[in-house]
Image (tube, rainbow, N blue to C red; front, side):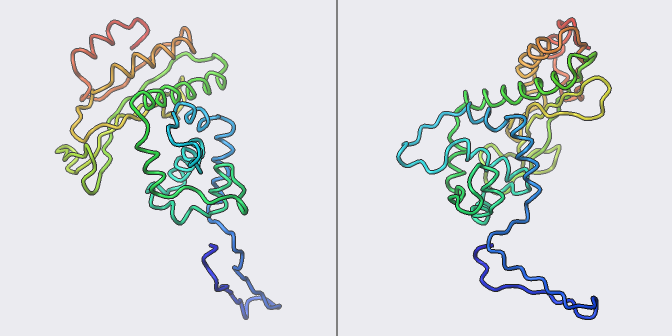
Length: 262
């Protein structure tokens, strides 16, 4: 709000016995105070720090103004707050709450990264970095619930499902999907459910082209996940729920060979 130079005032005549005036003249203001709860959750889980550790910074050190951890945290917090477009960075760069979320002083701290900087950051990771990011996300989810449930897990349910992500413009790998009747990506998302709890917990999201078949990448995800689950929850029965789009022989043969999977 630093760019606003005119003070807005609200008068409430005839409502109270004494005059009441509200003035909005605070230069450093934000409408995203609730995001502090996200910061508290991240500090407890250590998620953005663990994800940032998977990335490799190949920039010239003398020209770096925004560390990888700051860029990652800025992007994650913005998306979680409803600012999914990186273009929003221009008006959020000086927002005191968003600066606080990345660890900068909300008043004196340097402004956050611009949209071009965020776009370069998003396109910099290589395949091995993305793979490790997915591994860390699953590991953090599993470890959190291992501690929460203290080993009292009888059954774990894995849900895999493709979902359409409509696109606009000419993004790379965006194709027209006849089933969803739109140009889109078709990411594969996975959730874990423990015992008879109703809540599902996201453990993976794999971006795929708009023409990807439902089962593309499913066995690779399940092989890695089952190994982690068996190590964290020995003796737990594992149930896998898939829709008809996953009915391909190789996957069914793989599942039949798993003794603890139903």
